[in-house]
Length: 352
Image (cartoon, rainbow, N blue to C red; front, side, top):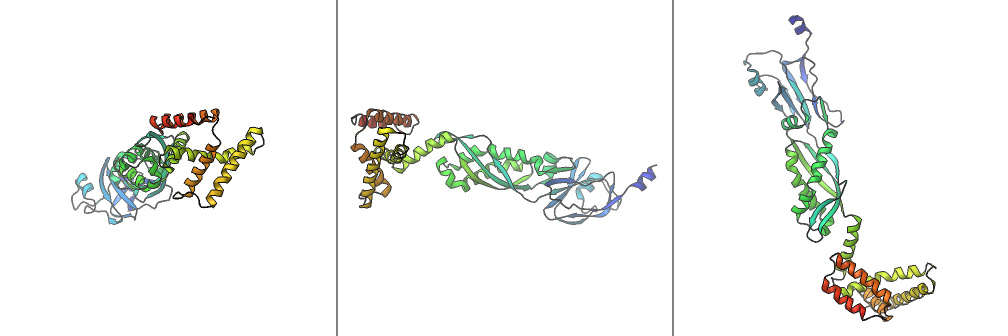
């Protein structure tokens, strides 16, 4: 019976793997009870590695090349089996092939906003997304920690885990970069470099090499974006409250004119639209005549719009509306208590 089993066995003399392009990372050569012919050949192509496993233990690892399987080319396996150098017979061993080419354009992104600490805004929740590339660098470690004895292990099997590793290090990357949120959009390359550095070690623990990381977009939730827009508006006028009010007035004039032109504002709406139109016309005329000396066109327009609006005085309801806006800016930390109090006193003096 033993002789018949021996005769039925097939002795494998060529070991090789041609990738099918289906995302396979690890593939076990189908032994099916057969044995490898001593002196047979092993072909490992570029972007591949092969691992021999004997009785559950990783024996020998082969990089790209063609090998004749003898006791000289299988030193570890030879030691495990205690072969004599003259012993030449078929042997049993599991052989796994691994794809070491780069896995490109893998996507990462925040499904929910991630909280980070920013020196300008304090606690901020941001969204970000991009892509990354990786490859198998240590097939021995990848086999023992990830793919194991499965016949086939694919990119999709590990994709979710790797994407989670990327996301958990976003806060670390922002903190390590030292880049304020306002500057992240202009420093996405540096942010990506910090994210790669923060994640590389976790990939290495799986036998993987993180080749590259890109950040394609960083954004705030809508409610925080509104605050950011207001802060940017303050920055445009250098933080000066007088100039900020002029800026707000210049922004409001087109809205007043648009509302008045809708036909539903009645006499008050028409008057407001007319006043705004006259003020805007004065500003445009003065700009055409040369603008304000030493000021940019944008600053001149804002200042002239504010002066034209102030010339007509402020009604009590307009003062209250302005004070409410200023109080909201103070509550959000954009205005200090002193700035708010000073502007409040100034507005109360302008009641008509």
